[in-house]
Figure (cartoon, rainbow, N blue to C red):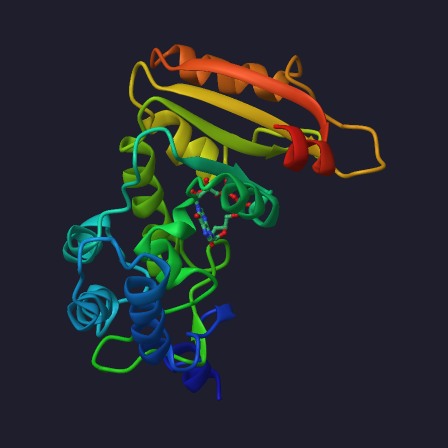
Length: 248
Ligand code: N1C
């Protein structure tokens, strides 16, 4: 039992790959390219599905590198028109609602972000299948797993492509609205290009007082990261969810 447990498909501490992963990727890709953004450059969904699979199938699920995703990302770079980007941290649902109302774009509004949103995947050396039983957990198994590296490299490319004014929606009901260990803090903010302007919106739960503000230490930390890159910064705080969606 001991040996089976540690060498078998069940040895990782995270949930396994999403059932029907390939089918979901293909279906989402068809929907995105035909219905959601039919105007966008026509893309070959079969090639995209194959490049996605080749990135991790048959590989050690703890040895993901950014390079593993190069071919996939080159088929569908996560770029958006100038000035339309929305970043978020701990405000996923709100940021998506905001982007939708203003015709702006989050990473999940790009093709690869849309395909992968909410899915899990990992492979197994010597097998051409996904491991549906378990996948590495970021803390308990390894940080260089295929899911974490995917969001990291996609977020990095998304941030690098930003231009003009972009926005980040932060959670003002947390003590630290800016978390330097989050994807936004570690990967996106430090990869914005000089001369970009970032507008931060601190939005708190309706009916409660805010827990952080533009003058708090977490936002000062964000400002110092941006100052070092010559990124301009504006910050708006004390907005409830409803105020933000209606008036921002
Ligand atoms: O770590 P976070 O948020 O700060 O990451 C959010 C930030 C956004 O601006 C996105 O552009 O990074 C990008 N991003 C995603 O779009 C995304 N979709 C789904 C990062 N992570 C994403 N996920 C998953 O949610 C992923 O598994 C990651 O670990 C979480 C991030 O949630 P968070 O801490 O609220």
